[in-house]
Image 1: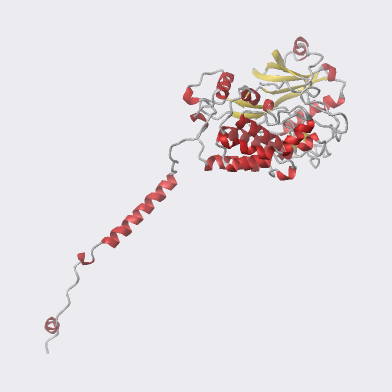
Image 2 (image 1 turned 90 degrees about the vertical axis):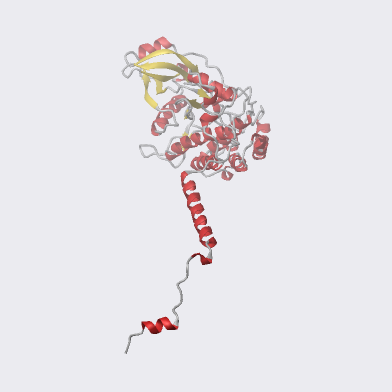
Length: 415
């Protein structure tokens, strides 16, 4: 499982001092670790902890084995120093509850939740084997537009499933998106992780019929700099369209191989966000179709109302565009270091002509479907028959000879 080293979430009041996004807002290293021996003793007979996968400001994630099921899992334990922090414990518990609502192949699934020694929360999740998009993008190798569109279309499916339950992720970024290989030459499965700062839409009721509690005070900003929508920076109301903005950023960066907002100060970042839709034109050099350019511009709209209505709409538009442009299948092409990163993460050697998720445009003529072939054959036969009928000589069919008057009299009955 790929664990983000940016688990600390940036929070500051918009009316207070504006920190630098690269320094003051950088994730802080935890001041204490979760002792692995203590976790093993607390979960003896249930889980067997093996080693640390990752660590962040909220907790530590271990590779563990479910003793009863003999299954590898990811075990997340909150830092003991946060046990007395009611908000931190509430966020940890909410992450478990929100993930348990979503049952979708593109969302990491939850296996278990409980308390160590009755006081320290832990969360057991599906172990996702693969590489995250942050590692893919670290190579600075831009992906072909169709490969990037295929990844984001699966993310759209994940967000659409979350919205059914009124869930807003609020932290869509490359480190929280993992590509899990599912077989040689097949499209990898995209997994969306880390619902640690997710929230419910205001009009969604919980299982007890009550409105969800508000863990983030009004005016406090939660998210990852560079991927938050303008309304998140400004401390305004966050909706599902805020997640769509982050999708647009991820899509742009996958195709360009660059950061969309490489700045450290908030004023500069907000200024760049206002001109972000115009930067979609820069991707024409990568062969991006005009329709995709326009869709990205809508996703990166400064105003939430200017963005598409739903993730489902975006996913359908991306798949329709790939079909119309007859983009080559994932297993056909290569994308340099990005594909190599996926291959290494899967722990298997992939031949050069079977790299799992790369593609370029093909120069071969468009393929014709079976229905189109039958229709063309029928039209050709019809044209051929009409041509033969019109070309048939007028005198080729012998005319019936006219009866003479003598012949008619001979046929008349005798008196």
